[in-house]
Length: 327
Image (tube, helix red, strand yellow):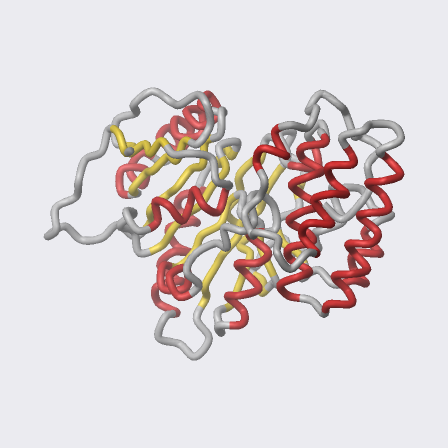
């Protein structure tokens, strides 16, 4: 149900950008992000339609000029999909709650949105634009990469979580890439609608890679704009890696391979992940749940939706810092 909504007149022009922030028990971060946008670029802030989707157990207080939707937690992509039809913008700016904009971010995003709209009539329109992400200390964070293949998966096994998925991008010019992270991404509405939004089979992780893969197949270009900068405060690679995170990340990786790679590649990745899970079950029995999830995914009768009961039953206090793998 939306709260603090101020319906736009049918005669009013559509805003260029609808910004959608997904809040899962990060209300303070959500509020800090909104206040930072407002403080840095108040004129542009007023021209953007702001929407918060809150799908956790705690929700932000009403914020003037911001529509808040409170929904069940069905995943990141589902949160965006659920409000996209209500959003009135020509483009959709999807953001994690833990994003903090740098000065000039909204101006660059506004220019990028205009470029998206203008490219619609071209032979190869731009469908998605990602931005330069920074760690909390200002150091560079990966924001784009190549599509996963078995070869890239195997090479990534020996790399840190910080770098294994991402590719270097140019410092000063907009670049064509395979995919951009969904932590902060601008999507043109015709592209989003032609793809029917995010695939909600991906509860968390790889929903962005999947969306970009399908966008390319539809003839849309995907780009990263390094001039628009924001800080991503709690990225996957910097967080304490719990078994619940491993569970959902492994599941997303396998779903991607099942959808977009040859069956033999998917089988190899599943076998490696299964061997890891059974080996680690000797130290922590809940690793068996990861192996059982992999078995279910390979079964023809497996439902696409994540088994939230099984996922929530995992002991989430166990720290998996030593875990390796393509997540």
